[in-house]
Amino acid sequence: MSVVRYDKQGPVAIVTMNRPDYRNAQNSAMTYALDSAFTTAVDDAEVKVIILAGEGKHFSAGHDIGTPERDVDVSFERKAVMWWDHVDRPGGDQRYAREMEVYLGMCRRWREIPKPTVAMVQGACIAGGLMLAWVCDLIVASDDAFFSDPVVRMGIPGVEYFAHPWVLGPRAAKEVLFTGDRFSAQQALDWGMVNRVVPRESLTEETLRLAGRIAEMPQFGLALAKRAVNQAEDLMGLRTGMDSVFGLHHFAHAHNAEVSKDSLGGLDARSMKERQ
Image (cartoon, rainbow, N blue to C red; front, side):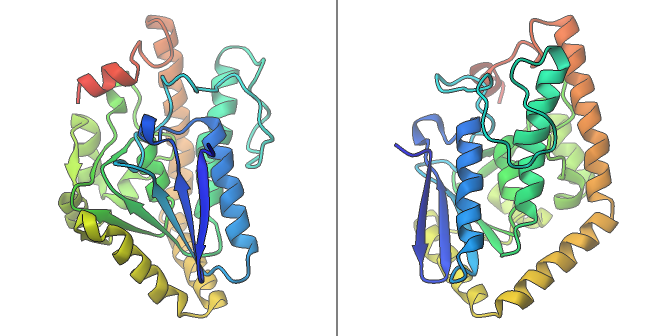
């Protein structure tokens, strides 16, 4: 079974994470399969809009930190090329290299896709799941969607693609991080993090409707408009802020490795869920 499905409906490409048994937790295999699917969509002149979806009840539970298919020790052909291959590197070098490529590097790469992207979110969108939704230009959420970034419980300041102050605003970002609590789709809408909240049974229909409306616009104009907004965000500090926080993120990993049994503060997917 492919960990990512690629479908096309007219001018709309649908890229679907396909690990529903693990709530679409992101291992490296999925990350590189997503990159391949996005590349296919970008290179297809007929595709004008890309939808990112998750198979099953949930969009994504975040990074894979505990499934049988976790693949942190496997090499893949690097595409973001933000750092060297992490496999066989010692200590912090290994973790920094992997996260710079697979998490921060890939998310930045996907943010710059020259075609509009729409995240179609249902159920859980947790930590690394937020990263995937945030790199998309628009987010349509079902009324049963919920969000959180609980990694402060690990002693970590936030996920690698640290866009919190820009997509939530500083005060909401602090509340989300300080408490680790879930917040609803309606709260996300009130904060301006998502564009629309729709009934679960209408999620696919409404997302396709929005994508179809966007696809009526000229492709080059869409690409330039996207780049204009992204550049404005970067001028407001998004990219440099993210660079700074990525250093804090890895300082936290190093601290955890010294004072606990691993760089995640001794927590895994099960213990994180139990503390929700």
